[in-house]
Length: 439
Image (cartoon, rainbow, N blue to C red; front, side, top):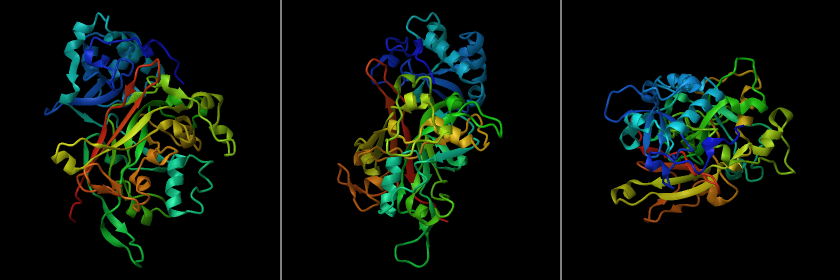
């Protein structure tokens, strides 16, 4: 796990003034990576780093001679239209470029005049998925979410017996992952109406969001070569926000015996910026299990995991309805929680995924599963907030929701803050539900 270094210094400021604002998601202590081009152009997508309200074009900065040594090698890999080549270079190379960027963007940098021409305003940028995602696995790391959902369907036995032993996951669909701003049609499929003897086909009536953390793999592993828990995080490039949209009525009919299928493969939205694990080092915290819970098997346990395996990322969910947009009313906050409540850590997800010889590759994406906290207000889905649709949520403008309606937008927000450190954020993860397409 990453040690604190000069890039985390809370006193650092940038010659890009917007990066020095207290409310900025992207101060110089963050420096997340993404892929962009100027909006309204046919330019080639390219790698950039968010700093304040700007993007530093890494390829252009490299061409200007801004980097040397290992940082120059890293920047050269960033001239590709995705982050995969850079991700595959490993944590030492990632750190070299991050350090060079911190120095180049610092207030006293002699390179400021040269690099101003390499900036693009975020407001004028178009983003794409930052890496070619070969495979996507969604986990189920929140025991609070698992218990809340289980209680709706199995009141006497809400948590299945394997949950506390195994990091549960399923193989998702990478082809429908898109960045913030994704708009998708309401999914259709089979559902089984209560009391009916045969299913019906049509649009989902119980469409939901899932507030998750996305984990991008950097360095892969060879087939048959498991990743030990002590080295797991050296294979992780960084994190993003992730919304795994879910059709609950389709899900409840199809999920046995093999798990989700059409209920989850229609859309997954991620934030465009990947915050590196190194940037998150100041926000690590202890990870533990309640004393009366089973402790992890030895391959999923380590002193390092216990000491700093959790990350205190604040997560919020906001809803913007069509009526709110029409009347120019702000979105309303539905809930908030922290990633520190996760029952399984990032390292445990990686290790368990590979323990049987499965290979991961640069750009692969893991989802944490819905992140819910211990209180009702910290639920990461409408399924929980509305108690399965039995407890409607009244919005400030008088509208009511149990599940999502057409033209609703969900915005996920995430950030880290702690006394004595600079606040860093992830940017918005926004998606919009469109009406179902007619067959």
